[in-house]
Image (cartoon, rainbow, N blue to C red; front, side, top):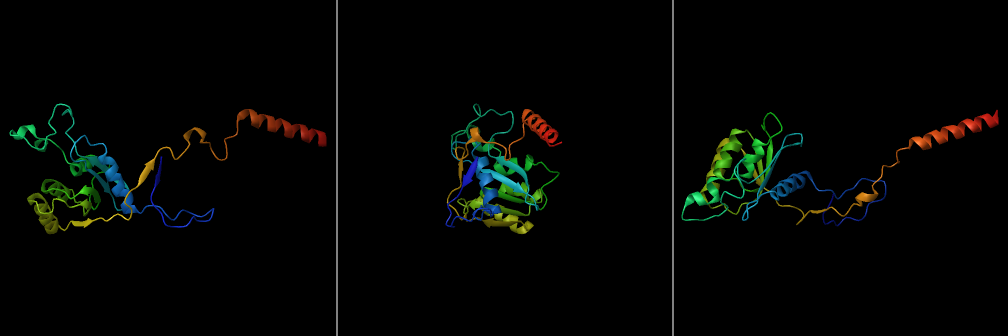
Amino acid sequence: MATSVPSTQQQQPAGQKRKDTIDWTEYFMAMAFLAAKRSKDPSTQVGACIVNEEKRVVGIGYNGFPTGCSDDEFPWSKSSINPLETKYLYVCHAEVNAILNKNSTDVKNCTMYVALFPCNECAKIIIQSSIREVVYMSDKHALKEHTVAAKRMFDAAGVKYTQYKPPHSQIVIDFTEIDWDSLNQVPATPKKDNMNAEAELRRVEKLSIE
């Protein structure tokens, strides 16, 4: 798998490191967006990525139903006369799943990267988990009560939140960019037969010299 981003830099000389790599924030936000691709929600797909102070990913999640609650049986509708037939009473948000999926003892002082600004319920769990910063992309619900409440709690608890403006409009993952069928070790691993042949040749050459 290879990734590519638009670049205005000239091709660097051979033997030097690449200078057009994506930065850390773009990398982690891209991971959150990639996780969102796993969501079954037909209307909103959100992913979240939690990173510790050493820039190591410690949790990934996306929005969906709890384990054991079938994606085919529970409702995905956003509106219904019967509230029990909407998704809102059942869906676990990406932020919660990322925290629950953590591969570390805790997520204290970590940073969460998420596509959409967290709601008030997710904000409570983020605060209680001691996450110190939230980096988000969209704030489309800024005027809604749940977002206003979330920001109020973040401000009170000292959780920093920053809207991310990506330097590139897209990051392309192209699985065809590498010819997987022709991948070889460089240098190639010596085969046992070849090694034996070379050893025999050296032995014969030594005898002829003597």
